[in-house]
Image 1 (tube, helix red, strand yellow):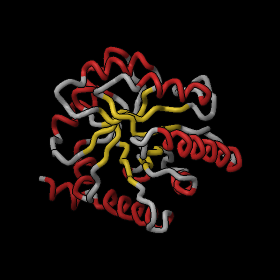
Image 2 (cartoon, rainbow, N blue to C red):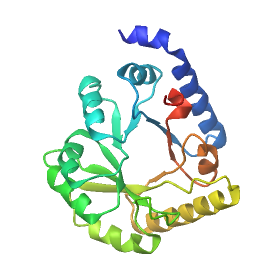
Image 3 (tube, helix red, strand yellow):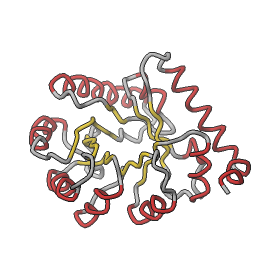
Image 4 (cartoon, rainbow, N blue to C red):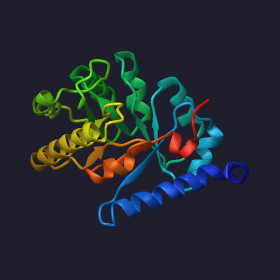
Length: 230
């Protein structure tokens, strides 16, 4: 069955291989940059094709849709990341089914995931930072990040791995680069005093090469792999 997916959807494979080559070229082979395939709204067939092409990290926004995929595609070496907004009633299922959560921006949510993450390895966590200060976006304010990190130290079932951000949706390269620079400086600052931090999740299909230039080591790409959603 998987061989059928592979031959039918070789465009996904070609996209993945092309992006990974660009990641290697952009990082000059010095710093490792991981690729996350943002698979929200994608079919089981598309995800299997990406898996056949060597992709192992997948990001999902919609919990119920994601759970169905995780149960169906139960390969042990897939790393599932939850990257969407989190409501309190979602915490148990997220804690039980994912290995990473990249959209933590409230201590209440972190606490609930911690409470449900028992008898399992610690959940890898990225704190979402609102670098653009847009009210419509989730994320911790820059000025509140250090105190947020301090509060998270009490959660034994969570492992703080880094920060994630969604920059401004803008055509201004200057504005975008300024936000990337701020995030990189913030990342380098907090990792000095928090040795578990090793991940700057930044960059999507339209700006991931620029994000790598400013220190991103995990990029989240959806349409660049699977094509535009219809």
